[in-house]
Length: 502
Image (cartoon, rainbow, N blue to C red):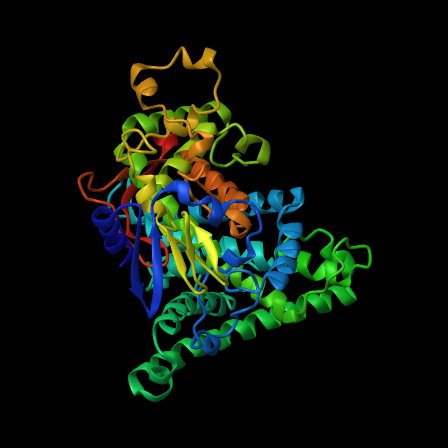
C-alpha cells in the first residue's frame, strides 16, 4: 500500500493532505519545513508516541515494553539508557565487527563448496543473494544479541545438499541446527503477526474461525520466541552467579544487560526485569536483520548497474587493504573509518530505497504541526520516500550518485580536482534541508542501533567486494521490492566469482 498509495496522494494533493485508514485520521506530510515539531531533538512528549495502539496488539504481547512498541516515555527512557550503555561501548562494536568477519568466513566456505560442486569448471556461481544475506544477518543478530551462534546459513546451505552422501562436507548432524532455524522462522512469523493483529479487529480474531486460526499460528510462534529468550536469560544469569569471570570477555547485549543489574558499581540506578530484557532482545531481533539485509540487496543492485561506482568501490577497498587475501583480511573500526566512498554508497542506497519509507508519530494531546492545531490521536505520516526523490531537495534524484554524500564534507582544494560529472551532481545537505535524508528516523525516537547497523553493512560490503566480483544475472531486470511497514527486496539474482581468479 505504502509504495503506491502515499506517493499518489502526494502527487495529487501536495505537501500536506489527510486520509483515513484503519479507522484513524492520518496526515501525510511531504515537506521538510513541517518536521521540526515531529523530528527535532526537543522532547515534545505530545508527539513521542510512534505507533497507534489497538486492543488487538495486547493479544500478541510486548506492547508497552522494550522500545519499538513502547509508548510510555518513562519506561522507554530507562530501556533506552540500558540499551545505549550496552551497545555504545568500544568493546561491543569491536566484537560485532569481529563476529561479522567470522560469519563471512563461514559464508565463504558455503559459496566455495557450491561453486566447486558445479558440473562445469566455471568460476562464476549463480545465486539468489537475498536468502543468503537474510540468513547471514539473522545469525549475526543472534550472536550480537545473545552471544549464541545462529545456524540459519548452515540450514540454508543444507537445502542444496539433500543427498548428503554425495558430499564430503556435511552439516546435517548439528543438534543446534533445528532450534536455531525454528527461532529465526518464528521471528518472521512474529513480524507478520504484528501486522495481522494491527489491522484486524479483536472480535474477528476471537470469534471468526479463519482469523482465529491465523492468530493461533502467530501466537504459537510468539510463545516459542518467549520461551527461547527466557531460557537464554536464565542460563546467562546462572553463569553470572556461578562463573562471573567467564562473562568478562563476553560483549553481547544479553550479557551487558544482565551485568548492570547485578553490578553495584553500575552508573544506571534503575533495574531491568527479565521481561524488560526479553523485550529489548526481541526488539533487536525484529529490527536487526531485515533492514540491513534488504539495504545490502538494493545496494548491490545499484552498484552492479553502475560500473563506474563499482570500479571506484573496488579502488577504495583495494587501497585500504592492498596486500590482504581472503584468508588474511580482517576488518577493524580503524579500517572502516577510511571507507568514505563505501559509506556514501550505503547512504545513497538508503536515499533511493529507504528501509522505512514512512515514519509515524501519534499525537497523545493537542499539538501544533505545520502551522495547524491538531487534536489528540491524530496520526502524522512523514513521507520520507517521496522526499528522497524530490527535486526540491536533490539534484537529479532518480540517478544513483554516491558522490552527493562522498563530497559533501571535502575541502575546496579537493573539489577543484573533480570531474565535470561529479561537480554537476554534487548535492550537499544544507542545514535548511536537514530532514531531506531520513534513514534511521529522527528526534528522540531515532534508531539507537544506527551506528551498529552502519558498521555491520560496511564490514559486510568490504568483505564481499574484496573477495568477489559481483554481477547481476539480468542487467535489464528491475529491482523487485515490496513496501509494507518496511521496504523489502523480493529477490536478487546475481553471479559471483573470487577476485583472486580475475
